[in-house]
Length: 499
Image 1: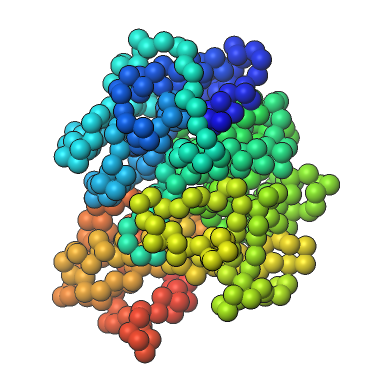
Image 2: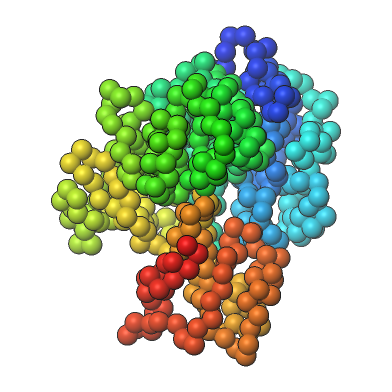
């Protein structure tokens, strides 16, 4: 079944009721259906090859959500890209994924269209967050009725580029079946109801905002209060209308700074995409009376574990991400491949219907990431307690998660090492009260480098969330006997740098 068909089945009988409230601009369920139909019909008219990728590098908007639904309806593959990505990053994604269509914000059309056309992209359209753009202009005359293209569960629905430990970002391939099965499990496990109201303040270029939040509301026919960008005072003002809120830890930290938090109608607060400090979890409970539900997932696997939603299913335990979700296999193994005892730290591996098919055009890398018996190696390190609750200890990979965004150190190091004044660099994550982790670079100098100038130059080359908050200059980097930089030592040395 086409994923859109399943989501559409969750819409309420009265399509003229409000589906999305964006700062007073109301979109009905009929608007979502007809708007995505217009766009799907326009994509179909382009006569694209089967399996074509549609790359989307736009700001968050309701129309961008409609575009995602339209790509599903038309049977193509959705490729969301963080709008903060700069030219060097976008060049990699376009070269690797070879999209047939690129949609970008109008302000970026000049450089993105040049880049895209040079790499064989057939179509480039604009879409802005104020309901303007060439994509909407072209689609406006299309029919408002569209029959979704038939798709099998294994058919590709989306590619999400995710960081690893070697090379540039890899494209995780998610199928219609992956996305639908995970959405259905979460609908039941998190007790989604048609009278829920989701306050949607997350970006929609990654799993958390696009799939977990949006699918939950669509599949259950729940209204959304929509924010194109997170604004703590504005979100706090509308909390009294909401029953469900999803955020990365940074959002909870910022909301705690607001004078008033009226959460009397709230049913469920969910946190993910980065570690939630136990201090934040405790402060939120003391302030609001609510226990934040922590869960665990990845771009490659969607949601894997979750603290219970209903009291009958168990207690929520701060500092853990809960037990495995239904149909998810979860195990923690020692280095030798044997199962860890209760409380013993080891490597987290998973299997289940939400686990991706592999990395785009990287069969060897895909094979490396799966065990002989078909389990995915998450790269995370954790332990299970007697009740099966998972506590994540860290990552065997060097991935940094800052404010919910993935930062791959080697990529930042590659750009940093090209700059004048930098001999070698090591990029690490250090604790940060707001972002969970912040990016810090440790470099050896050539001459007398200006660290502020280096940061300024990086901001022009890579997304802001990847740019180091601080650059530290040292005479030499710590290494082991094999010459490998000891990042663990650096993390320990600079753990309090941004405290």
